[in-house]
Length: 279
Image (cartoon, rainbow, N blue to C red; front, side):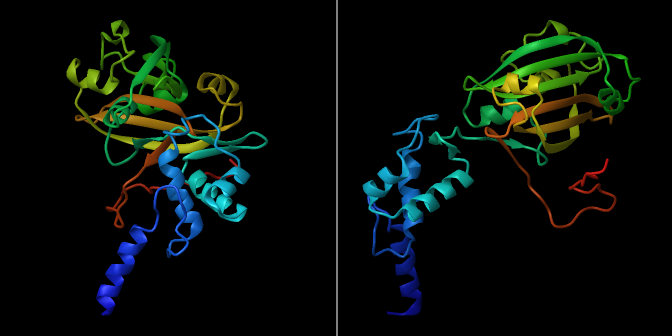
């Protein structure tokens, strides 16, 4: 057999090595990788989100493999966010994370979730005029304490708390916003469609921070658990800042995807900011 045909045969054998329900002991694919592929389709079907998986001993007996193989397979699934291990409790099926566009396109959570066929509902906790915080004033180029529209929402994806957002906008941007029902609406779609705001570009920064007690309570996590903090400023086509928001995302439910390029245009800001630990 020629080398080319042998390579094709090997690829086909590799692809077909895992048959439903059993480990193929003659396959080139390692046992732990086969076990992972056997478990994957059962996550969310046989075992629903939040349900406990069988213990390691049970999996060993069911698939005829060692405990080391089972642990390697579970390590892979945990690393991909498909399962969650809780000390003293067991292994549970994790909810699938929502991919959110961070840099490559200017979208909001509503659009990101809808694009993946999930349902987003917002509990509006605050929609009022409020004095601008120092951060909001700096980003929106107004005096600190100047009146801005302040919108605070707890965002639910498929009935689970996902993100706590605090949005600031100048009144001129959307003068009727205080009368809008934002429970099921995209703010960006509303700004563009009803108020004629030509959103053009933005700057977003994300970092991991410990959840303050109030944030933890809203998101249903423990105080000081890690959450993802997203800060975003948006500008219109005339170069005016029109929106600033902060959003605390559950780290076990969200992840951000970033498209990158090797070459950066002259004068562009760095893509990674290093915080001085002494500051």
